Each structure stands twice: as structure tokens, then as C-alpha cells.
Image (cartoon, rainbow, N blue to C red; front, side, top):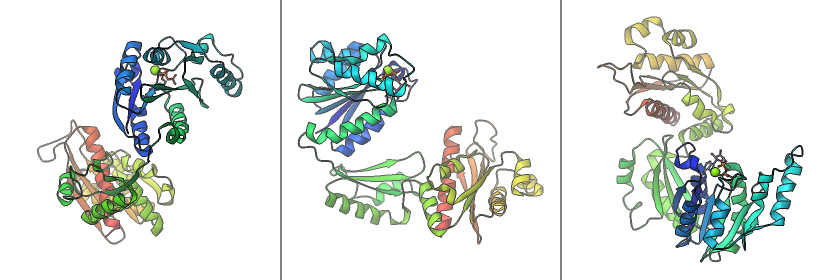
Length: 404
Ligand code: ATP
Ligand code: MG
């Protein structure tokens, strides 16, 4: 049993809005036991929406359409669904009452616009999905052998409506069995090295185990199946990757969790990463237990003033050097009175590189009370990637230091 997603909106095909609705929905649909077999993104043109709905219902049990339910003339999803079903659009008094109720509750100062009336139109035979966050009711219909649900485009409205629909899915789709999903996370070794160790765990014959590299520096192995299958597959994955396992999905959450348990604190001294290390740490709920402060010391003067990096050291070795990054970490740890510190200094480009220190040269360091470790990175890519990679690697170094 599988689903398909149709994401509607000119802003999506023009690249002005990232289609986050589809990624969110795809995750939920997989978790519901009705994984998504494909996403089609179309503009607001009615013909395109009709064609996409027809194509999707051809083989899917469930089709989720998102967007195009607004009150304006260019919102064509309900018209498209009526055409795809070959039925009229009819005025639905219940839908209209819901729209009026929303105005009374949320915007009592406004009277519904005439255009809102469009949102009470329903393809004959379709049911409405209540919207507690906006005016547009969703639609639920049968088409061919499939159920088609049309949800709003506004992400938080869409999510709330999908979650309510998900509770009803077992009744709408008899035979639906939500699979067990389990994950193992690791960092510190590349995907290809991992692939070699995972021979026999990841193979084409067993597509229920997948591996994904995330942008924030860790790799996820995900197993889907029955509880017993997931247990054995994850146990094998854990054995294969035991030297690199993380306790949480990501370096920052793993580090925050570990330090919280140990009642230890961390600080960061950042140059080329511009606060990304601190941002990753503060993104973790509960980070305040381990992070009191972090410093972005971009200019050499700031490295001296805020981190106590000696002027001579900067002059002799330069800002991007092992000596400087070690001094940054140690100075930051002293200044913050923290148990651990992590630092990064490098050349993110596109300018500023030299033969000796080309763009992508980044020194990172981590220290605790007893020792300081440093590492040279030479990363490729653009400024954004160099900064992101440096921040991830710095967190990895801190994780490795904290784990001895
Ligand atoms: P609704 O059905 O809720 O009225 P709509 O498509 O008619 O949705 P729009 O005004 O087009 O409404 O979009 C509302 C907001 O939702 C916009 O900010 C739009 O960028 C965003 N949005 C629409 N579709 C998506 C999507 N697939 N992913 C992320 N954001 C989206
Ligand atoms: Mg739209």
C-alpha cells in the first residue's frame, strides 16, 4: 500500500518557496504504513492539478494534495478535484458554518469576505476536513480505488489537519499496518567507509534498511519492518558501527545529552564558523544546562581581547593555524569557566586563500582540563559548505574528546 503527494502552488515551481510540506508529509506517511511513492509539484493551473490527481490515483491508495485551497481565484484545487471526479461543485452549508465559526472565534472584528464563500464549495460527494487554524476546510473524497485528501498549503494548518486525518487512516484504508521504524546514528567515519563495514547489513535484497547522510554531520541507518526485524537489523548495524555510534540523532544533541548527564559545561570560540557551533548547541532543548556563553571572535583583535590569544602568537603563526586555534579553545574555556571548549578558525572563501592556506583550510580544536586536541580540515565547496562542515567537525572533535 502506498501514497502519493501532489504539492500545488506557483511559488513552488518558481522556486520561491521550498516544498517543505511534501518532506514533512512523506515522513508521516511512511510512519503511518502508507509510504509515499512519489511527489509531484505543480503550479496553480487547474489542468495541471487535474492531471496530477489522475496520475496519482492510478496506483496509490491515498493521495494527499497540499495547497490551492485559498479564497482567491487562483486557488484551483477544489475545482480540479471536482473535475477529476467528474462531479459539480456544490455549496456546502457545513463548510460555510465552519468558516463563519472560525471568523467568530479568531477574527471577530472581521466579516468574512465574499471570496471566502468559494472555500465552502465542495465537489459533490466529498467530505470536509475541519481546519482549526485557518479558514480553508480540507476535502476528503474517493476517486477510483483511492482516497484523496486536499489539505491547505500553509504548513502549520496542513500539519494539524494531516495529524487528525492520520488518526482516521486505519478506518479509511483497511489493512494499513504502521511499521516499526528504528534508527542508529553515527559520526566520525564517511559513508563509503561505513558501507564497507555494513556489508551484509545494507544490501539491495533488504531494502528495509537505508542509510542517509545528514547536513549536520551525522549518518543515520534506518530500519523498517516488524518489531523483530527492526531489532535484529539495528543490532547488526550497531555492532558494525560500534566505534562511531551516537546516542542521539546529531552531534549537538549527543554532546548536550552527555554533558548534561555529567553535569559539565561547554563553550565555543568561533571565527570562520560565525556562531554555527553555538547555534547547533542552542538548537537542542535543554542546552542551557551545558552552554553559558560562546564567542564569535572574527578579527585578530577580538581573538586577543576576548580569548586572550597572545599578539605574538597571532603574528608568528597567523589567525588560521594550529597554535591560534588551540589558544582560542584554551582561552575560551578559561574565560567561560567551562569544562570543555571547542574552537574553529579558517578560510571560508571565496577570497582570502593563499598557496600555503587555500580556501577551505580550517583549524579546529577542542580542550578540557587535561588536554587540547586540534585537527586540520581541508574542505571543498562554497563558503556555506565550508562553514557548515567546520562547525560539524568541531562538534565531532568535542564529542571525541569528551569520550576520551
Ligand atoms: P491554502 O490552501 O491554505 O489557502 P494556498 O496554496 O491556497 O493554501 P498560498 O497562499 O498559496 O495558499 O500559500 C500559503 C502559504 O503556504 C505560503 O506562504 C506558501 O508559500 C506556503 N506553502 C504553500 N505550499 C507549500 C508547500 N508545499 N511547502 C511549504 N510551504 C508552502
Ligand atoms: Mg497556493
